[in-house]
Length: 577
Image: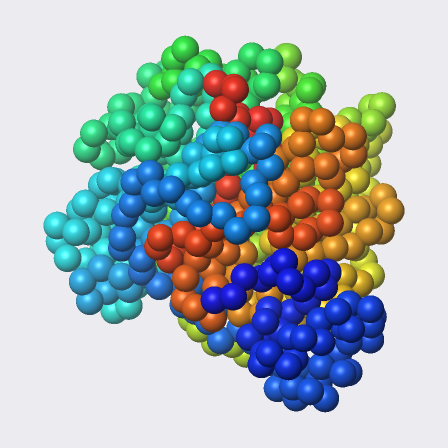
């Protein structure tokens, strides 16, 4: 494939289709640059099919196909130049295999964990990818089927209901959501309290850390006795988006504890800390009782300020009865409740303040900070009926183009928790109702502070390759890396037809003066060539400055983390969002 930004054609926001055109069309590039604001019309006259294929998402489903090859330290060859300040380890895991024997998982997030790791040094990079040797993978390989475990979707052919309660007690160690580092401790974590202890810069699995009730092989159990009540079932956790204190290295996370006997016992949200010197021991910060009859919440992320931990207890609850019957989480295992609670925990004393708001669901906290006695937080907001990101990533939805394109889009909403107990909300980007942002990133130097700029994976994206000011939203699978300055209104982004960028990591320029001085690093699946590449974008202009073909195709990966070479702990943003 021809490079996206060939040096012979400096057109700022050209479509990838332009460089697959005949020579006589490409020779018009200088003229098109001069007529940048009016170039769609002349190009359409020359090449009528170019506009017709603008929203080509024909390769989208290939992003969710098995990729079984593993590689170790493969040098990458870049077109362009990698900024010298990008030095360290980029880690992004995700599902790498969706089939086992004659069986296919039913949800994009149910695939077998595969780690992508890239070591940057002095403008060069080496790529490693491997399957995490979990009990979920090894037991499935041994049996030739998707082994019993809690999943988000039903398999094809069906098996979860048949496996029933064996799923809850099964091989629930398929971690890939996010790489977390505190001190010298390396973990791959998900939204459970089972963590994968890694080593050698996330290239080797040492063992799992799990509750005592788990019967996983090669595991160590949490050694604390005062965190999870023994009479409760404590399996959901906010671990992948826990928080590492940049000064002390102490990690903060959350576990949701549910009553096994209905309303006889109340449920709890428990906030804990982990000292890197004792990675298997959690220390109690706060035990938050919930009103009788209200279940513990599923919470993918949380907010953190220097003084507070903020839980968004959304009305999305795990039904143990349905789970024990074998219902997957996105097909009956998760049920809706009523109002949303903000639970604000004092990091020094463990005291708790509770705010209530009309029910909504959320995906991620973009940023959270304090203003006087108020706490302000920006989140990716969902309607109750959408079930957040759970239902749209069921394969029965993704494989139905009409269904996925009509799925409700989420919003970006700012909440202000006032000192007087009131909750105020404001929809950000209200002038863009037809597009959606997820997997948000900010400059880590602005974490827990007032900020302006965020970046995100944008679905129903715009044709940034034609016009950075475009507001013509495409279908769900029109994916881009979007940039928004919520203070100035600046809008930029990176989009290429039939190419699918995953979450990108913001790496700040240490000599930068502005909030957006830095680079975005991420993996892109090219549906035109059925291959993947690594790219580096200038975070200010959103122009591609470097690109390297990867030796394997990378299926849909989830969250990125970057660990600078000069530091033994992650930058703060890798632990906050």
